[in-house]
Length: 322
Ligand code: PMP
Picture 1 (cartoon, rainbow, N blue to C red):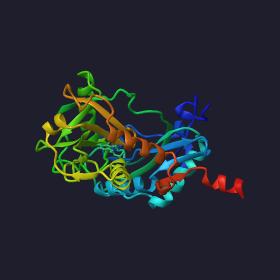
Picture 2 (picture 1 turned 180 degrees about the vertical axis):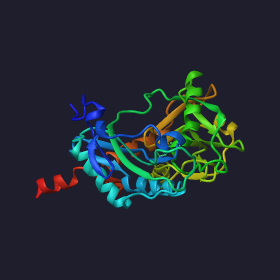
Picture 3 (picture 1 turned 180 degrees about the horizontal axis):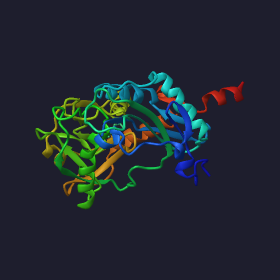
């Protein structure tokens, strides 16, 4: 049985206020700025347990802290330590919780002053890391039924779309709930000017005539770390051309394959969009090949992608080998 199984959230160890503490002992006040005004930034990092290696592989841990630093800068906040140092703290946190299962890591930096007044300057900040066991974000081997949302993806002229900013997620929540209450699994955002942007918490890819298409970085997308991994795998391993450009809604209907990518979601194929079946309505060959490579890479089974991974128990394993 995984170590974290059955443990209540209150008893898990988190990093907050510069120290390791019980989740249940951390206090966040009701007037906290980040809670009242959405002035926080966060990351979603995955850890994958490989039982054969006896290792918990944390996927692109430092890259997530680099992105967190960039989001924080937009809100006039600074990470308390360097990405490399925060990666070390995260490894230690996983070890203290003795996780030997798949996990989800949630670093968060937020405006912590408990006072009234919306602004970014002159407000204190706080930082925390929480790690919880995590299985699957989508439970769908049958593919997802997606719809184009009536909500548009936040435009960079309104709030910084590139930042992973807590308040901006009301945009995603509106789209996701609308989609699910209407019987779909996931929403696809169009941007303010009507181009395909992304899912509620995933980037999107289309396959057509043996080419992979994805909205370019100027389409108000969050530039996903999984998106970048998929671009690498596709170019390096599959020799398929990748095109990053603006994509129109009707291109979704003509695609042979569509899939979402995200740290939580992994690589998830789409069965239909707006009730139009994508391709044959089955997992297509391109997404299958990419998923297979990606899922092997994140569990440490492909040596050349080992550089993406930080082993939480690597130091321990090195000692037991020597
Ligand atoms: N877009 C949005 C809005 C997201 O929340 C996420 C999840 N972080 C992504 C895309 C995918 O990004 P990543 O692959 O870095 O998880």
